Length: 159
Image (cartoon, rainbow, N blue to C red; front, side, top):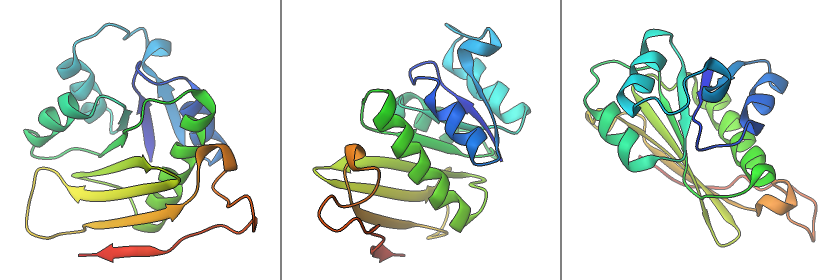
């Protein structure tokens, strides 16, 4: 997988992807800062990049109109660099289990101390590959509970 990181995120996800053996580029390093969203989406699609953003509404709408795309990862919470790094690490772990997110969106969100991963088809098809996972964690705890030090990975639902 190859990742293109939006300018609304720090460069931390680039380092995370590289550390996990993936190719990744930040929009600002490609001289694409301030480009229109549709130009960025087209660049990602034409160059087979999974696009990573915090701009959920705009890119959901753009990707919903594409018949075929390499995938979209949305880091929902607007957080600083280190929590972004940890949330994207979790996203990569989810993608490693599920495979390439062709025509899919992986959303990563926080609900209190839980990280929620939701994968769904876009454009919408039949039930497809949909799941939602909740992990008891907090970005400051590096995906581990502070009292036990154990990683949590209980899936709360699969469709």
